[in-house]
Amino acid sequence: MAGQSGVYRGVSAQDRAAHRRARLLEATLAVWAADDTRITMTAVCAEAGLTERYFYESFTGLDAALTAVMDEVAQEIEQRTQAAADVAAAAGGNAAARVRASLLAFVELLVEDPRKGRVAIIQAGAMPGLRGRRTQLLRHFAHRTAQETAQLGAPDSTGPADREIAGLMFVGGMAELVTAWLDGALDASPEQIVAAGSRMLLG
Image (cartoon, rainbow, N blue to C red; front, side, top):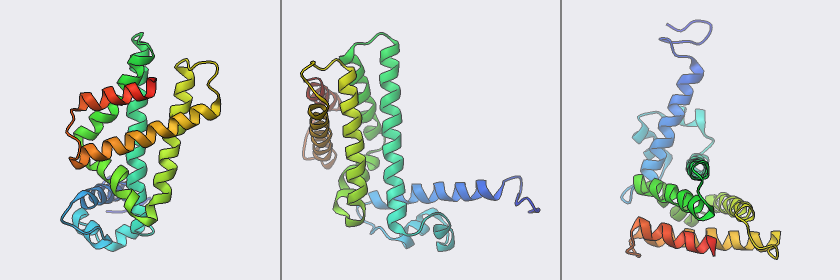
């Protein structure tokens, strides 16, 4: 029974709400990535097995849920690529090894769950309500790339603006490369994607 603390069967109201939000996020990803299903709040609720009341408990609307999925994917990419680079650095890896480890972690995530790359990198760009957030995330990764380039020992003649330009070109190029790869327009192995990205960044 629920007491004054809001605990029901040993689970707090806050934890139950967090669990429902996680279910809705997974359902949003599933419906968004499905080719044969139109992404609507009703479809997301049906996939999650929850009512619209619980949807609005977590999100103000469909775009908010889609944005939350994009943000989760971006956070996972950032965490996994940074962790891989840190492991490579701890093992004494040089700049090339750290770049390769980071890109390999990114590509492995897309291989494990192609839906994440498809919705965050490809489909979000086609939705007016999400383009702004997608642009922000791409520019965030471009800026991070510029910072990493400085730490990798870029030539002294390379200034901050040059690194930002290179970061934008790298992230934009990788987005197009991954789009063609996930769409099946490019027949390439994960190793080829990693190698191409490494050459682009280190060059």
